[in-house]
Image (cartoon, rainbow, N blue to C red; front, side, top):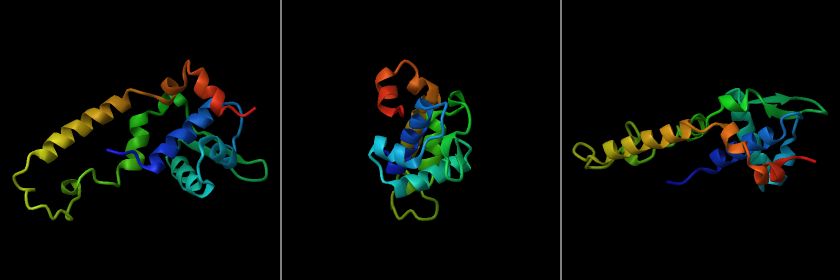
Length: 144
């Protein structure tokens, strides 16, 4: 299993905003701190704003900030939002499975159980948990 770039950028963006709770941050600041493309980041920010995780402010002094409390953002929810469109394996894709074993293979059930456990673990971690008592991360992400 490999985390997509979009999900990784989503978490980095949320952590950046959580490290700077009292200010509006700019996409460029996040891109520099997280070594990310501003164009790719713009797509991620748009999706995070659609879900309410971010609030965007337009205009010359605009930027973005958390749209809800860091306590209300779970890693599992963010991962589901960004990873849900990608089937874990071919047999998870409805109507597009060409695997000749799909009718009798138990691997899909095993993988499904493992994915449920994976997401359950991520659901127990909030953005606050990632940031709390993490001075090194906060130092890397805080805008001076």
